[in-house]
Amino acid sequence: MLTLKNINKKYADGTQALNDVTITLPAGMVGLLGPNGAGKSTLMRTLACLQNADSGHINFNGLDVISQPDALRSQLGYLPQYFGVYPNMSCRALLEHIAVLKGIDGNARKNQINSLLELTNLTQFANKKVVNFSGGMKQRFGVAQALLGNPKLIIMDEPTAGLDPVERESLNNLLVSISQNRLVLLSTHIVEDVENLCHYVAIIDQGALIQSGDVKELLVPLEGKIWQLESLPTGIPNQHVLSKSHRYGRASFRVYADTAPAQNAINSPATLQDKYFFALNEGSQTC
Ligand SMILES: Nc1ncnc2c1ncn2[C@@H]1O[C@H](COP(=O)(O)OP(=O)(O)OP(=O)(O)O)[C@@H](O)[C@H]1O
Image (cartoon, rainbow, N blue to C red; front, top):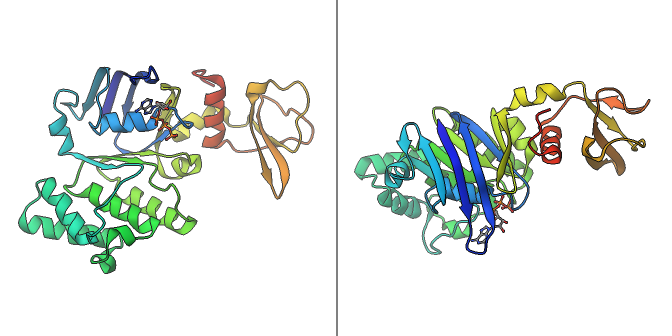
């Protein structure tokens, strides 16, 4: 279990990137959602002990993370949004190098690397330079290096960004398979991925936590109140228009309302995307 209490972070230029974030995250796959600039990466980097919060407390399974960052690092796997690789190193050599830095010795190192290559489907590319990997292979390598040392907390910052649908699905399946008996915190802009993969979600906006909870439970208050329409009738409050998108080139609105807002409105099952837009519209209002 990961507990954050009153976490604040202000950058030198005055940007308040995290504003009094307090939350407890359970084990398993947890999603972190928020618009661009919400503070997700700042939060991930703080949890990964790569930068300090200005104030607040972080506790992971009884460990005080702020006062004992090294103790956390030995239980931590991190896949940053962008990661560089040594241009001339093969996949296996780079994993060896990172394993040495993590203090994994001898046979244990060899065995772990072999099983991680297998898990991430990279065995046949073990001797290829990572710099020449495709985007999907690079991300799978990123997962393999994050798993070295069998960490109990894994932080993934937009791991599927830029991947084609097949690679995205394959990486998502891999992430679920590694989330047994550990906490995997997944930051992404793809709300659908969080709905499919995560049992718990936290939504932040402008540095503040605006919603968190069990994904299925969060949707309950919206059930029966989401309506799909091709055009908007007058009189619907702006904050109740959750989204406007297109399907086959035709407009499609999703609206929150207790009763049908128009005769042709189609009642639709609530999705996490509805909840996400609702939470962003209403700030901290609980619906
Ligand atoms: N080093 C920095 N110095 C000043 N401001 C920063 C710095 N890093 C981030 N910020 C600002 O802090 C806020 C939060 O940024 P952060 O990168 O954490 O958001 P994010 O949710 O990860 O965004 P995105 O989804 O676009 O990656 C933004 O306003 C950003 O411009």
